Image (tube, rainbow, N blue to C red; front, side, top):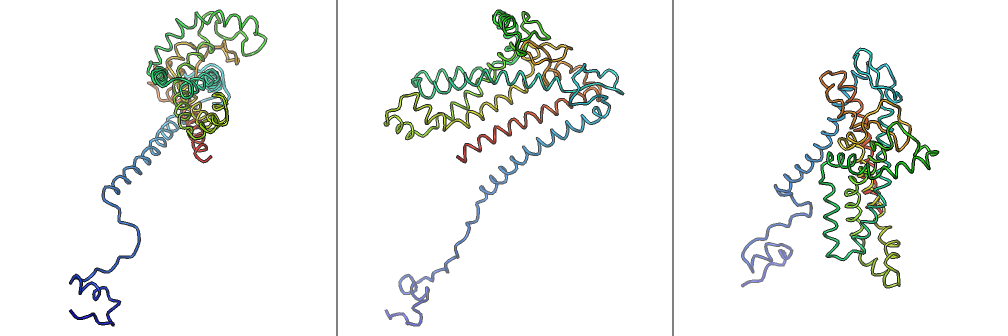
Length: 341
């Protein structure tokens, strides 16, 4: 076999030819690999799904605004500041506003959140840091099952079972702390139980599974090395929770609370059963009654046969839609803030 010509020493064909008898294909330049058909399909489906959600949200908002504008044009009151009787009998000159609806909705939701947040925090800490594994699982499932109870059951239970048990506490608070506006005599009967005091406690039970579940999952993700390092330095179990678990999961706890608040703002049947509508003005007392956005809309569904009457309630629904959208956006921001720490 003759040696290759030196002039062809740099040729890939000359090097490969004598040994394999086959020419080498030229090397392809480095670059992006061509995506597979399956990857392209999955990417298109993922983008389409995300875009569909945005389109649906925008379509809901647009529909609500489109149906609300004709009724708002016939409203003789300031829609945002009027808190009197909701009068839509004469559709040529209607009188309605959301002041009281907004106040009752926010007040009962915040009251429920104040009650639920400490309990949810304690549940999450116990299940992730103190409870043995054989006990943590069943307890977690039990708490989560509270979310499966229908809201109408919560409403009936709250009014006919819980309210009589709360009556002595409510009476004592009204009698001894009535000088404070929160415990003053409201527009609903303290003894009757159909008050924000009862509704807030029931609502706290309803949002407890959401807050505790989110908080529990975040606390469970605390790096084990941080916990072991704290224990190695002589920290007690509570000091471990205070110095490692709580700082790590604080934003997740806050985001869970915001999600619970969003759930509370839209609760309908339970609050409709407990609060019972009243025509008297809301006075920022726990012993007031009244309507929230959702319960007002549900209670007057019989008026939806007229586009202008329905439009008045749709306008209120639009405000509730925007309110819950803002709350959930804040929850999302809290989660994003956790990821950038």
